[in-house]
Length: 571
Image (cartoon, rainbow, N blue to C red; front, side, top):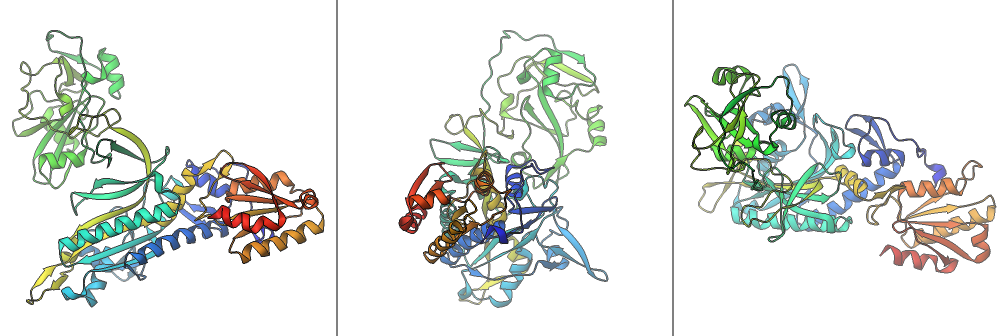
């Protein structure tokens, strides 16, 4: 491709209303154009990157015995009703005919399950895995991270079907290894880890592929002794112990404090450490129970963990009227003292070993200080872990302090069990003519999200630094000067490189306003792996200047050795 044929221009100015590095760089480099929040056009260079990511994914899926198909973007309302997912917040809905509705699919379980069911009923038809690479739509409330969190995005979604659990577990590992290979090929292998995460309604765990990145949205907890990685949402944690100067119990007292916001401000007002404050939240469960959950100040309640502790399918924060009826106070002033007996109390293990601590007084604007176990409140027979894990916490099994880091999720794999096959009445008929449950798995990779993640990870102050496997072009060839002979020789070199399979972006601009500095800065912003410079001076010397984008190292290469040199560089 010649620069003169590229209708897109690079930008010096930072794009407005973009707070992510990937969006900033990709827009400035002319790879994408923002159309609205979470929706982007892919311009010639960006589209080439997208297709290279897609092709790597396709090749590894094919090796994993997955069969490529293409399903519709729209799916009928009745399918989503069968799986109880029609009311999902992320679902875009539209009216197709009078009183008929459809969804723009954020995922395709509701389409693929009845599709495969049409053709596969015998146990002999399984195992089977199908996949597609297609646009998805998600009504994302926080579309503020460029390609990392879009409302329209390109995704590879695969779905496997099995007649027994053992075969599912076997194939789950096949997919896991395929993902490792995909990220390795893209240059992310050394910094991408398999992370245990919540399995939601489907299973105890799923697995995410998280790429280490300081600007990532997720916090990952690493257990060094076991080399295990856990997502923040499920990481078991023990709070580090806190020592207190108090030697004796002090008299319990209520303190009025109006307009206090946040635990730091409360601790300062009461002149106590944050660790002596207590957060108490009231929840209602799907069973109609009312529970109180308390954690030490500085922590938040992890509702996912709390559900498991309580043994309920769902819970939600108690309504304002319920809180006031139970405690007599507005929300924010609940405590564990003198709660009605029907309220079940759960305490996080961060509450252990405390003396003279604070909690809400169950009276608006009041806090009770110097609360003590045994004297003022009964110490529970069992403490639980339902806090949100944070830096400095310990892995309970070994007592070691977690190593934590930020990361970007670039893929995930889910056991779906029989949730969707049961919803559609899908069975595998065995040798005895009996219908057996069909076990499913789901395997997703955000193609556009991965492109954004690579941009977020591989860049410097000058611009992008693409890995060789997914760069839009291998070489940025800049012809410098006004001598026609330079451009004639440059085109000959382009032809020679392309004949050897090297992809060349040829900067053939001869405008007086476009000097060497502009061409070099455009290359650094666009981020191709290397730049070749041809000029009158290099022609006189019989060389070209070769600049490695990753290191900035420049070396002179003889003209007749350039093709061999470049092909070796790209290996």
